[in-house]
Image 1 (cartoon, chains in turn purple, orange):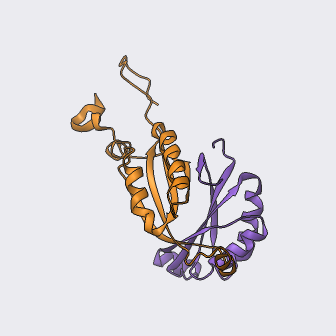
Image 2 (image 1 turned 45 degrees about the horizontal axis):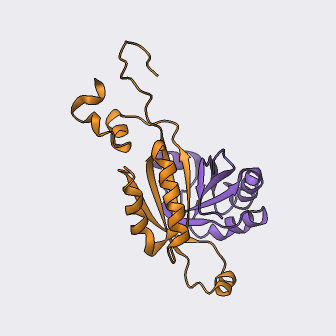
Length: 103
Length: 130
């Protein structure tokens, strides 16, 4: 399947908040996701300047959604665990060209 | 794109895509090998977990949510064949169900890196520059 019917949302959050993200995403219409453990890095000077502590243990939540509900899912995810929430997450989406195995 | 010169051998570069394949953990090597056979020189496999809730897993009789995510850099001209083959395997192999999506690269830097990623074997020993 092609022509960008789907989008892949990547959400990078502090470890332990993947369920918060998924609950919000499900409420907005997502079906499921996959979680990868990761490690964050940040410049020491930037951390001191902006008075932000970057929690190094991260989780990356990947959620494949139909393109028409992408905005709703991203808004829900960001409301639940954006930079102002405890999960301190960022989210972005990438257009998907092809999909296999969804049916 | 450089259109200067009269070199008729100049071809448009092969486009690359990032193929993200999510499969059961114990099938990750099988799928990585399968993908590699489509002129894929660079792959990353990472442990991951699914997000299905415990009550759904109990209902389905599934014990664990352990997954693997395989990131592969694939030539776009090989992608149709590869995704067709993956679809067949996802359907036919017991416990081999998975999902794969492809995302296009918008840019890449470094001639040798590009040649490596698209398996341009004719570019070895300076062929690429001629």
